[in-house]
Length: 486
Image (cartoon, rainbow, N blue to C red; front, side, top):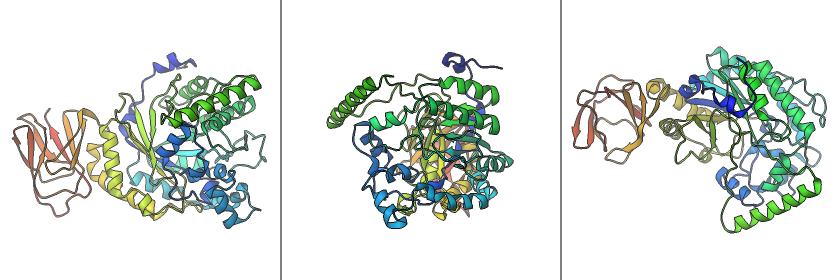
């Protein structure tokens, strides 16, 4: 089938079933920024950063993301600039991290990564192929007009990780920062007007980004096309999407294809940006961030970053976040900044009960090692999913998403066929628990997911009382009841 490159035609294509059922993916941020691995600890989190950015405040010295190292380095007096001078000296620029990164890239064991990801329960992986620093992780044939010909990884990291992931039965998606590239603009990004300037790099960049996305599609056939930071105004993103769907029939595209369409006249453009900057400062003084721009382009799913939606959409959606405050590895982060196993399990359950997927990020260090601080919650998640898979994968939201037990523990609901799963976000007790405001059919059966033995139950008015038998190894962090017969 050949798709027409317009929004209406592409919208006729349904979201592939595999994505709605997958529930868990692993995001991987790894690049030269993983070598310095620095963002000042205690800086604003993502929510505060975006609030400041959208109200016209200067944010470059408060970005919590270590993968933004190059941008922060360009801001005189920023914590990153001070750290860089003290650690590496003035004679080392960002490209000086390439030799160590490339040495690690040649040696890294992607089979070990893929085993960890699928062992955690991930059904797909999304790799950052080229972040804002402009450094491609594959042997691209598309030359960057502002960088040396060898400004790319010496090993085909995209191809090799894709092979390792697919060999284990998972799908492979690719991230590409289509809207911006810091090798095409050297001024740092500090405010919303800076962001718009960075998204208006002109026809030369538009040709470059389009050619690289097409190269990634044609070479690796990714299951997800995960674009970031918008898309050049000179190219209709639906042309990329139509080519992608023709190439990968079961593929999906995300929702980050906004286009910054500025006046072509330089004087008019400058006047517009001055006006915008002033308007943002006024809105900031009033405490009113600007609303999200309308998404006048096709997309298969909506992405939320760090903060889940209070009212989940009916369509496909995902929550993405790091295990810590950063996506790229930040050596400054400690256990206090990192999700525990229990927190990751509870987060996944919350997202799935709302009908979404969780894209959980892993940030390997500069040597390609995934730190124990990140491995521990992944292992805990994998152990829990090994027993409770039926309550998560291939489920849909129930008519209501939540209740509590009478002792205050949260309960989340998912559904598969005639079975509703009640997932209690607490360690599994022995004895009775009561789920508030839950009336089930008289003919229903109640089982412990991953059981035996089977619990007994009775209705106490509007509440459901379940008597859990003692077990030698009760579940930690959360447990699920399967209520069948609706």
